[in-house]
Image 1: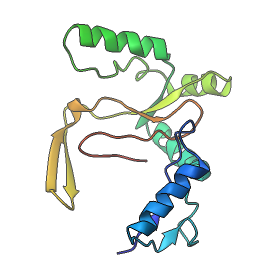
Image 2 (image 1 turned 135 degrees about the horizontal axis):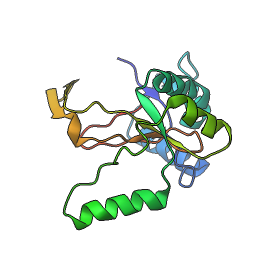
Image 3 (image 1 turned 180 degrees about the vertical axis):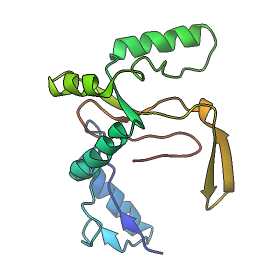
Amino acid sequence: MQFLLRIEDTDLARSSVESEKAIIEALEWLGIDWHEGIGKIGPNGPYRSTERKEIYRKYLQKLLKENKAYYCFCTQAELEEEKKKAVDKGDMYFYSGKCASMDYEKAKKRVEAGEAATIRLRVPKGEIIKINDRVRGLVEFESNGIGDFIIAKSDGIPRRIGLQPWRFRI
């Protein structure tokens, strides 16, 4: 097995040269060496997520065309209102799917015209998702407990996604 060091720097407000240096120094202090990555160039670069935007864009477009993802034009205020209503009712919040049925070509034209949109993964409803986890073995959970989550922010940068206790990335 090989260890590839890739820096997750998509949170532009918190990512910095200093934080990257701290990660590298911490790994070195722990005696953890990587086979490929920052400082050790190989075939799987680039090694910073923000430098991989074209790779991500290619796969985001593929997901959109295959109807596995969709553009979402909801504003932060609209989403906060949705969440507040769910919390007030005592429900767990999931995105309503307001933009899920929008025609792809129409949505694409809105984006091309400069309208801000995120990209959400279209999570199938009513399915059992199975993952073979190397630590826990076969893990199963219901897709209805996930909701259609954002996989790319409106600036085109992939969103770091953490679904506890599992993490999904594009």
